[in-house]
Length: 366
Ligand code: GDP
Image (cartoon, rainbow, N blue to C red):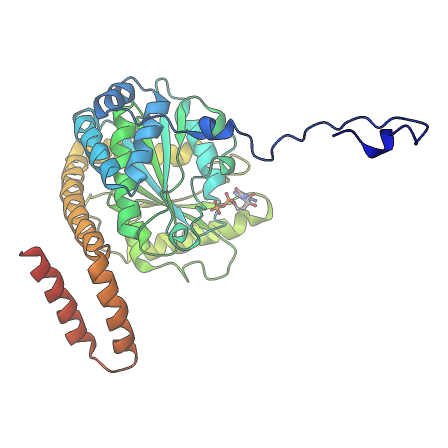
């Protein structure tokens, strides 16, 4: 419509008609975000075996998905990749937040990649991601140098599900990474809870990263974690901190003497280094190389991998049973009711558990 002030009774400037405002939402955006169809299992496998990182990432996304059809396709891919897996050094790294894991993985990773033909995948198991829905480990931005390396594949922790579920997904991702030619696998976790056991059960070498300077160094470290470690390394051995790290080294060495011998026959070593100033890194890797030579020689390497394969079968059964049970809508509703009854003492924990299990099993036997 013509503007009223353009009427002949108004003199002076004319008012131009306005320009149509573009819509707030880009009409093309919908078309753009439409996802590409998920490739067939055979296509994914072919890509992975060629070392195609996009295909590898897509397959890992399928592993991490909670959708049933994704799960089925992921399992098909894993099954086909399995014969091509296994050819790697799997190394677990743990340490409390702030111990310097990301700084260290960055420099350890670069060190490993210096070997001709080396490729490295960095994966993570982060129990905190369950609660916060945000992963603190394996984030690309935490490993600045490594993330620029074409031979490095960094994948944050899968976030959804129980620790068992998260760990299984990481275990399956190892298979795909190995099939894609990654011959070094780092699995990182925070040294605060049960996730160490999960990592320990999927790696060949378990490295505990410690820091000195808190007085009694051994306090706060669970005995079980120390017992799992094939090597203990004390980070931040630089500047004024050197005497403290040396003291911690002596304390750890004497503490380790009290432990029973490891089934591998290997005596865990305690070293100091500085991730930030890149001091003592070759020595840490020399220890790891010696470990691999030792366990390959005495047969423990193969034995442990076979044990781990069995362990993961049972873990997967446990996890699938649990998730099948808890994801059943009828069970979920029953549990909600029973939960309150048990809490308010109207029902005993045991009869409530028996009732809900009976309900589950009777629905299965139909
Ligand atoms: P993460 O939480 O275990 O991943 O630890 P980060 O790698 O993020 O390191 C925590 C802090 O310790 C950062 O401020 C680092 O700069 C610092 N840091 C890491 N390694 C060293 C080291 O070797 N020497 C010193 N002095 N500081 C370090």
